[in-house]
Image (tube, rainbow, N blue to C red):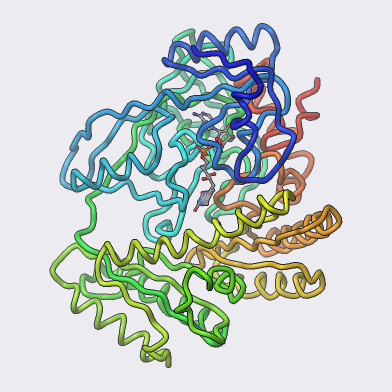
Length: 499
Ligand SMILES: Cc1cc2nc3c(=O)[nH]c(=O)nc-3n(C[C@H](O)[C@H](O)[C@H](O)COP(=O)(O)OP(=O)(O)OC[C@H]3O[C@@H](n4cnc5c(N)ncnc54)[C@H](O)[C@@H]3O)c2cc1C
């Protein structure tokens, strides 16, 4: 274990992508082995010292930032095993929690496999991705991190350790899960509240008969330390076809997306080979496009929205698929002059950089203003997206603060970023966010579909689960982490940890 106490050398652990200031810790412990983690956390538990787990600190909600106590960094647990082929459709890879997503994706790709979860930030660690149940653009076809976790090795705050494979331990009808650790059996009861049945990264997982692996995924560093994961890989596509379409009318973009969603569903249900089946559908509003116009002067003038799409190709049918997309585009009265096409991975990668440039630009603005970022992460059920987007627009108009919206429109999951330039504006933005959260909940949605709750979004989660939900979560956390030292103030306010 490496211990760093000198405050000057640990400053970089006090900042993540949330823009939150004032993070502090007595020291940083950098684990060099998995045993280091067990020994260290058991000691901290005895001393009752709070421990915040830091992954790569790319998080948006300050969940990896400590406010007192110590930081446990897993950056040196960065070994990757070999890819194990199970059959033609499946392989697995064992990785330690500090491995970067980019490295996993690259290793899989070089061997003809794909690790599908696709968060925009590829420097994040797999431990961080699992702890936030991260996802990204390609979630439209491939789902979220949870869908690719086969097993986890976790350490609890008493120093005990458990290797939990998917399909091994389930909650009974009484919501109780009993499982083995190297120091004996543990018994926990799932928290009681209702989560929406859509893409969601808010609150501990509690669906009926939950698999224990799913309970650890998305737990934001509050109940265990993930030291290792076994991930599922699938065959990589051969090629990709895609593009960016610019729309003069925002609602035309929504209509186009609805059409593609219906076609993609049909392709899947009927197992069609030569039909439109989007891998991702991403949205950019007028202001998001405005923000990157300096980087991309070719963005058409007078546009209200952009849609980026991708289709994965597995056979020699790229020409047919391209034709199908062009047919849909033309039948939607879209001027082909307003479409940028990519016909291979390399060209499509440039569009992905374009997409990534938007949050990067927002982050640059946030760094300059030194005011925390206010970014929504709501998702709503099918058919409800326009209602919430119109609601957001009305809120933005009232406030008159620079805002932009982009994100995963295929999953009704958008990020509205509101960029405050003063403390007063920040308070106004938070109020606006609260109103948007109310609306998302009213529509049967979630306040966080991928970034999780962290230290910034308690009040929004409360709108989903109520105060009783916090009490349930606190009880649940303590059943894993008796001393309550792990990830304090993540997900729910730490006052709920008091006896
Ligand atoms: C430009 C940009 C774009 C982004 N785009 C996306 C996106 O498309 N989709 C998306 O989902 N997110 C996105 N994010 C947010 C961020 O990358 C994710 O939240 C990511 O999962 C955080 O991983 P990390 O390793 O940086 O974790 P950190 O920020 O260090 O920590 C996040 C949480 O995980 C916990 N944690 C970390 N490692 C472990 C572990 N081993 N065991 C237990 N708990 C642990 C921490 O305690 C904390 O609660 C983006 C960020 C940036 C900067």
